[in-house]
Image (cartoon, rainbow, N blue to C red; front, side, top):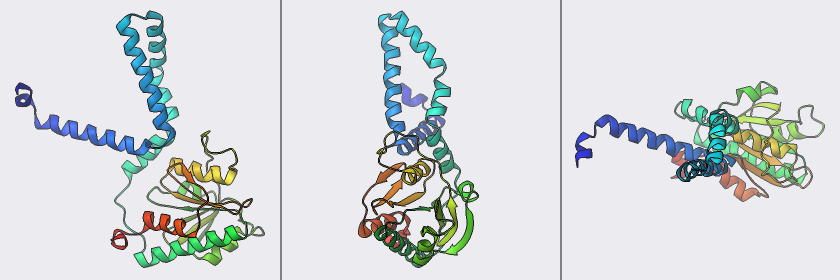
Length: 254
């Protein structure tokens, strides 16, 4: 009871803010390699406490030496997660850039294009921007600013097209650039069977909240990537449901 009497409203606010920050951090790293790294750090911390408690001086000295470099190591190891967290913290409220009808029509065009490309075994990488701006990647490619359509996407990725290499970046109902080069994932988790196209899709979604749709030219299979995780062998129905779940407005979901 004495503690409750001494509790200030600032203390309550402080606890709430820290809880929110920790919750958001856990959401960001959930299902990523950062979660495994945090478990490893927790093990090191427990070893530090244990060595101090029972007097393992050599172990204590070693962990102290490692701990001095821990801040720098955290920044290097968690660079994608930190970048994603800062981007999400700095973003403004999400305002749909096009109406629900236009959004659903554009998503349907993307689905139809992905299926057509897969049937013809034409490799493709389509990236759909969400709340993290992809301007840095767009500047590397060829600007288009054209309305999303199945025919446009097929013509872009046709092997004879001069801009078929690289990724197409879609924002709203517009194809804003093609031939964009994306960062490759450095994670060892994705299968070694994945080529550059798949690793680029995973790499971008590790650093941003974008959605990537990858079509394999070897197998004609479709994969989706989001949050650094990839889903293989997706067909028309699941692909449509996946995109609708992410991009459809709350009014359409009700």
